[in-house]
Each structure stands twice: as structure tokens, then as C-alpha cells.
Length: 245
Ligand SMILES: Cc1ncc(C[n+]2csc(CCOP(=O)(O)OP(=O)(O)O)c2C)c(N)n1
Ligand SMILES: [Mg+2]
Image (cartoon, rainbow, N blue to C red; front, side):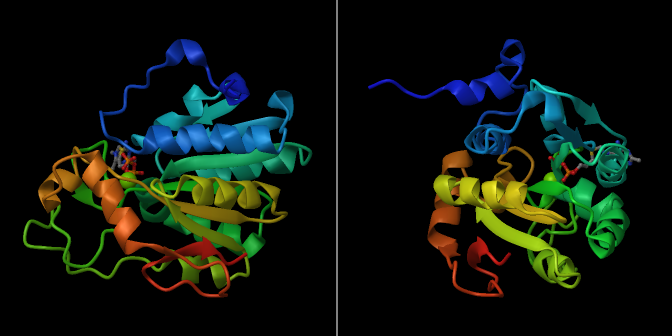
């Protein structure tokens, strides 16, 4: 059987393998994003990827098309600027939960008010991975991290509610649900206006190991067992993944 590997055209193959840790989910998101670009036949010359800072923020550099590695938290305003300068471009942000919802949270809030036509893929590992595992705005209540050794007591951001408050596109998936995650990305990329695909992604090195997971595989099995697909609802429950549009 011949495998279709043309999605690799969207990657700088000479940079592979990535520098991400063994068991990290970022490569899964990167591959699915490339496959989504291929599915939609996005032109390499008409597409730009923007990332902020963090492990997830390294994503932009791997794409074999124009990309920008911005300052921490600033991927969204840079993407908005690119779109304003040339509205014909497909402008995609790929970055981490800390970058997009923590330091960059204010930009997300206001970009969603403007409904800027950009697609945002959030690598949501619920941790500040690159800097050692400090808790992030999406860390679950009770979760043990470097900075919450007795368990997180801060309510995580309700990302769905934030995005839907301004009637933008929201989808949620995980790195276990490969076809579903790709569908979320494809629909987010097709959407006109601001779209946000939150992909729950495992970080074994600086998150999972503190929570008792032995390896990335166990974290994927956690996603498998704990997230159910619901594509027929306008509002996803905490343990549901789906496209709410
Ligand atoms: C202005 C600024 N503040 C803090 C940092 C340190 N810093 C680098 S990456 C990072 C966290 C990134 O977290 P996230 O976006 O979730 O990405 P991940 O590493 O988890 O993929 C922080 C706080 C920085 N580089 N710049
Ligand atoms: Mg993170």
C-alpha cells in the first residue's frame, strides 16, 4: 500500500526530528496541522503561520512556508497585523496555552471581539512546559505542578465560554483522537472569522510525571478514557470534545 506523505511538503524536513521530548504531543499536532493544510490544499505562498514562545511556540519554524516566531504572548496581534496588511493570506496561529491564554490572554479577548479572520490552534498541555512545569491558565483544579505541589486551587479559564462569548468558532479535541482533532483543525481553517481549536496535548516531562503518569502513552490513554466525542451540541461539557462552530 502506498502511503500518502505529501503533507510533508508543508514541513521543513531537514529540521526533523524535532527537539521536543520523547512522548510529547506537539509533533502530533504539527503533523495534523500539515495534513489539514494538505486536505484544504492551502497554497504555501498564501499561508502564514505565527507562534509565540514556549515548546508549542517552536511549531511555526517547522513549517515550510512563511512563518513568524513572535515574542511571548504576541502571536495573535502579529497575526492580526499580517491579516490586515494582506487579507488574501491564510493566517494561522499555533501556540501554547500559556502563550495564548496567559500572557497573551488579553489579545485573545480583543481579537475575538473583533472576530479577526485568523485560525488559532492551541496546543493545550495545561502547563508552562518549556520553563519547567509551572501551572498555566488551563491547569485543572487539584492538578499537581511545579508551582502547585499540593494541587491547583485556581479555576482554569473556560476557553469555550471565552471564545463563544463573541460568537467565534470553537472546537476541542485531543492528541489521542487523531481524525477528530484533524477535523477540528480543518473546520477551524475553513471558518471565516476567528476560530480557535483547542487540542489537549500531553506533556509527560514537565506535567504528566508529576501527576503519576509513567509515559506519554499513558497520557494518551487518559484522553481516550476521559474525553467523549459530542458533535451535536452547542456547548461541550468538561469531558467532551467536539465542534461547536
Ligand atoms: C515576556 C516573557 N515572560 C516569560 C517568559 C518565559 N517563558 C518562556 S516559555 C513560557 C511558557 C510557555 O508556556 P506555553 O505557551 O503553554 O507553551 P509550552 O511550553 O507549554 O508548549 C514562559 C513563561 C518569556 N520567554 N518571555
Ligand atoms: Mg503549555
